[in-house]
Image 1 (tube, rainbow, N blue to C red):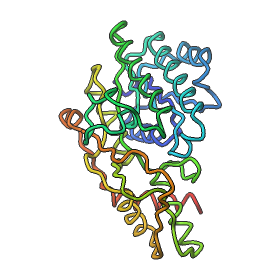
Image 2 (image 1 turned 90 degrees about the vertical axis):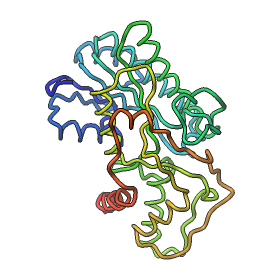
Image 3 (image 1 turned 135 degrees about the vertical axis):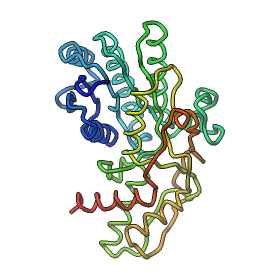
Image 4 (image 1 turned 180 degrees about the horizontal axis):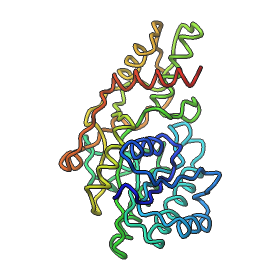
Length: 309
């Protein structure tokens, strides 16, 4: 991938896409093709094909998706399966047809079975039932993986797939109705501190374990894979360590400076008991994360306060 190649980042205004753009620009890749969802609806096959035929990108980072936490997945299952299937189908097929050199498809760790071995190796895909609270999204992401593999086998199209763990960073979604656990907790603690609330309520028991990766580390891994990996096998991207939701809440409480009570609402679902990725493959390809969790939370809270103000 040369500095002057035409690079399309699908979903460039989202958490992942914006991080990939920041890194590419910092590394001197100057020819980025960027379209908002208002300018290009990736669920529209004709519009997507027209864009690829006209712009002819050389490389594609597929980071566009309909995303959200447990509540959003449970409330909008049709949106999560339908929109993500359309985006993947339209982008992957159009990329192949227009002569794209290489495509990186970004999935999610929720593709793995609910009771997968821990840490989760890539080859445990499709070996057991999915977590019911996000199976609609997971099925769409599994279909995108299989589509990349099928186009590689049948057409020789260089499409690779990477599975990130739970992500956080600047540009995250802090809406309490649709956000993931970390940004939701950051906002809850911030607002509790600002209002003088005597407690912060956290969904579930606090016992599920989760792995968190700063989105800038993910962007670094994506560029590394685009430059150094080509194969059918999916690649996990994570930090190799996890913590409980209760421990995460304590880290965020300290970063925010909130000193009152934490209450766990055990009537709410916990989701998957544990989600830790086996990162042996990407580590063997020469990549390691750089940003420690405590440092990352502090920097994201500073970003949130600035935006919130």
